[in-house]
Image (cartoon, rainbow, N blue to C red; front, top):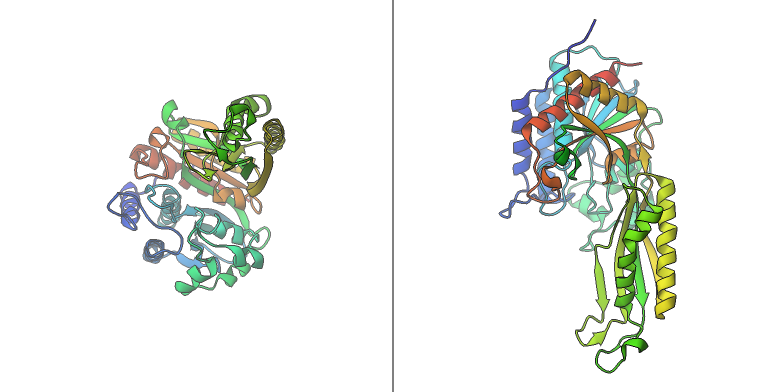
Length: 415
């Protein structure tokens, strides 16, 4: 017997998206729900109330991950969906929040329709995905990656520690050490998210089936030369740190073409010139390099190529080259069984779709280390995100929510 595709309650879903969007919004129309801020805590309280109102089981673990549970027995491996409700400063209303609200809506529909399932389900809002204290704290705790050393050194840009920020909200950060899920306790994980890029919008496609989540490395690079008088030092007698950066920047496209893939990206996003005076040759430049690709071997080739290029430039220009690794994240292939469940749900609904990688890191990337994981993307208008201009058409949100709902049903119906 063919089981008809389920539909979310669009009015209820829209009301929830709009209600959460009002929490933490300021006069600039941006949303400010940084982890453990007043806005974040208000969002958490709202979510807990919505879970309680639904009659689902409410759960919060030691990392302050908030979950709704359906048919929970504590023994059978669950099917999980979720994302995050914390934001960057001045954020849009859909990044992360859409995945949480749609996951909750999926569980409500399955509960109301009394759908017979073989597995329990969970809808989870992970803590600090956006990175006030480093990023993806909640999913890392669930995966057993948070250590006492991690807790001791996690601080935000203002020097506030994770331990203190949680304590101010009545939470004990050390409880995160006990938030790890038992091996095999999660049957599958699915995350619905806005694309945060322009591909789906430009193609006019409703659903992105994510086949891989990009890996990345972030370096802080220092080129040190000699600060000197801008007027009295001839051009051929300079050790100009900025010129080293300028030459390196000009080589980025070549390196990507030779060693990368069409999916590779490299970004110099922050530059500091020292001493930073108009009439002084820069004696030092400190800059960031963010490199991403969905293939781990390609990332390794790019790291080697960028290091060689910087070393050669430094030698040629009489500079000292140093770099520090700020972060590294391995690329992840989405689980075939999860991808297949998403594809089937898209096909049954007659939706347009395409396969693509995620160029941003997500909690799914961490959970993939302990459970089969996949992602569903919906279009971002003009690719805008981390901005009040973030927008997705409601028809696409509904398509994504229904795809998530039916994907969860399929995964929870299998042995």
